[in-house]
Image (cartoon, rainbow, N blue to C red; front, side, top):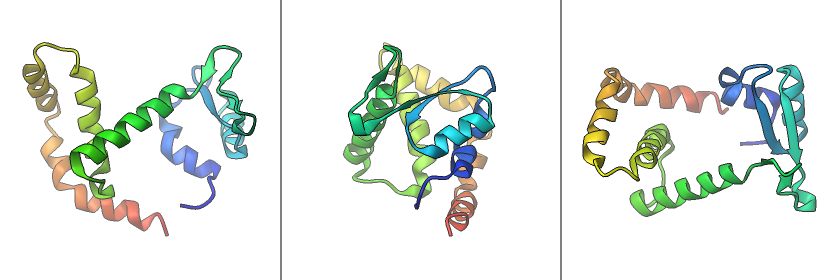
Length: 139
């Protein structure tokens, strides 16, 4: 997808952060530093080149790495690969699955979760349009 730029980070997480309330932990790529400065958020960069995994005994990205690894394994073992067209749906399913994994009443909670969003069917019908829009922004 090319070299990471500030605009890529802005598009991915910009609407989800709040200045003064967000702490960004990332690798030491300059784009993250610029993004943090532009958005007035605290930033802690971990330097992979020196195998820095934790900073100040608090800041780390291991949770993200662990979650990424579990999602990848789940998608590969369940679907035999991934279709980017349905990636958001896979992630939604995974999030629900992880949220109810320790519950005794999994089926009831699952049905409740999927019926909470009355626009789910509409979103499903818009998958093709949203996918085409995503692909058009990549070139």
